[in-house]
Image (cartoon, rainbow, N blue to C red; front, side):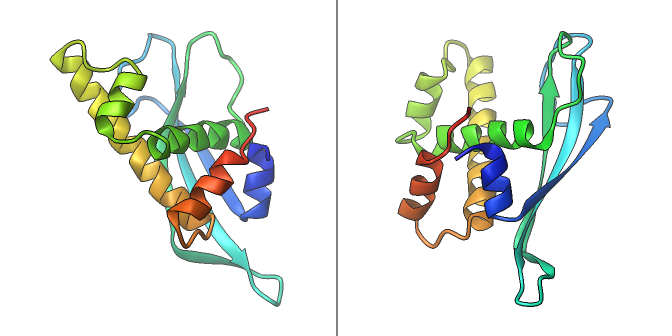
Length: 149
């Protein structure tokens, strides 16, 4: 299932706004572009009206390097967030995550890795709500169906 198919299946929309910098303190190359992303998950009621689900809004930031001159589209950003959720969900624990992604050689790298782990954890928590999952297994099934194209 592609990112766009997940967006459509679970009635998730995104608002993407360009910002001058990331307030989370992430270091990026000069000339990088930064965006605030607000995801909203909803259900369609029997009258065909889109109704926001409880806890169905999530704010995050997305950046792209200076070589990318086009604005990101919703499916592209959402695909990255799904990949982040997968990185968290399929790691056995924080130590496994840090090792898998090469964090931990220095204390500053370890802190950066812990921050990335927490961000992926928050993304996974939102997506589990947005995907209407009642169990971790159900969430893993949906994640395993994701095809980054």
